[in-house]
Image: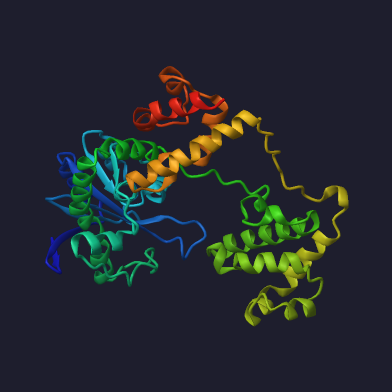
Length: 382
């Protein structure tokens, strides 16, 4: 065990150490988990450290030195062990992607903070405002895939997880007082089932913000540029933004610079980028400009359904109720009902409890807390 800054932690970097650590974790009732990854530095991001802390032990697992982490699977899947994360969406997807780890009995301190109506829900803000703990974030954007890691970076990683334990205890107490703890646990149970998106490189513009506003020719240029950027990022093992920013991509697509001189005048790229990539960019742009009209991409658009007058009236009745309820609870209105849920309710028109129970888009806690109000409002709309 090492001691830094008044707390102990151990580095788990061999299979035998992981085996010993896993045996200890099996006996715990509550653990806190945090990850460090390298998405800022590599094309294919990966988990570089897993920090796991309990009241008795604080371990830093190095998955770049241990080939098999399957010993952790039973612990993460065990419903009798509470797993505390903060902003768990990314972590859950990453653990499943890299190690096929699934999480049961999740408690996300960020979700807890949202349902308490706290405005600042980042971990550093919560620790500062609730526990008077100031996190030093100077290593947050470092490359965690480098080995060996400096001891001060490992110490930095160890602190996030251990501080989650008292934070979760405090937030859980507040939620219990407000009778919202079950709400959060249901939200966390849903979150624990998220999985990484399947990679699809057929039409990259579909995931590019703002592409839906472009005409077909500009869309063709953008797609060529995005495919080129993807190819370069894979070859150089760099994240996409370190090849070209999204801002540069859209600027190049809209300008359609067909030669190097025009590209230089555009002021969308650095001199170094133009020297390195200028010719291949111009080539990609010209290929898109020479594409036949009937081959140009079409951005898929679904026609918004024409709402019947009675549906519109129901939406108008539900939205102010939702907003007033959120105000009374001092939480964001979208936590009470999203706009999509309101539209579903207006179309499905549940008029009693059995109707409400059949609407799968609503969570159980929403049905329990708001079901009677919703059906009463809808019954009044003529």
